[in-house]
Length: 331
Image 1 (cartoon, one colour):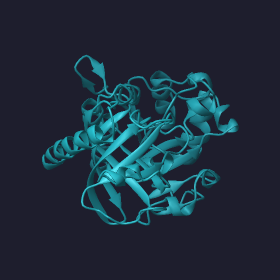
Image 2 (cartoon, rainbow, N blue to C red; image 1 turned 30 degrees about the horizontal axis):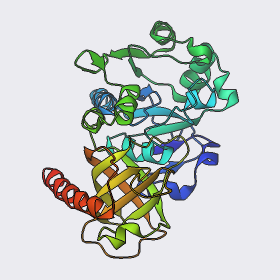
Image 3 (tube, rainbow, N blue to C red; image 1 turned 180 degrees about the vertical axis):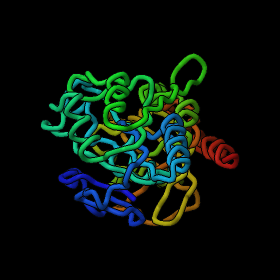
């Protein structure tokens, strides 16, 4: 069950939500799970660390004959508060996050609109208004570095003290590590932008995805035997991986189609300077204009390169196709 707080629908349409999700726009005492086991956070990308938290949360709920409840916020607070760099990008849109959280096994999800009013809540007001008067949890699962309230003044000590007064337990979950670094959305963003797709996908626990509609192209790929679909991507602040050639799987309706994709400025073509995203789907010869494609990045094959002409480019694309087929065969 997914609970959507009032007014969050301003940020997306009903069609954006999976038909498998139960949408409740006005949480009440009757719609919220009683005495839930809960956690809250941004969950951008719903990476391996988030997935472990959700599994642990569900187990704690099962042990207490209760249900788990996850609270997240939209839009991302760093964007809303303008505390992020100008080039700050997200791993997941709201629609993607809902889908990923559902896939990760979330039992109940409440999305709170991150508005000016909500951002102004002090840590004590967050505890009183959200936790005490609305959620009434029996247990809160939090990370070691949990922060909440205006100026991020709330911390685990405050949550623990409030729990002793209001009747909830506080359980802490250690940060999930890979090597000497914590698994985090920031670390995954850096990997994707640096072209380290293998690390990013491992940290995510699934292949990174983008989604967009097929727009008009110049048909140059078709002239050399590699027709491509130009992807109009993406939603504002959605991260697009580093320039280069990738082996991908593309979802079109209920089909999953293998292919390869190029991100970059197509330096071999004269007069080309704008960044494009083009996907070539293997053994597919149909007009995809206007279709929405969801693209999963499986393997980064190489950097974008400039060739002496279209024939040299065609020969390289033949090799890229073989390399992509090999990479996809091991999926």
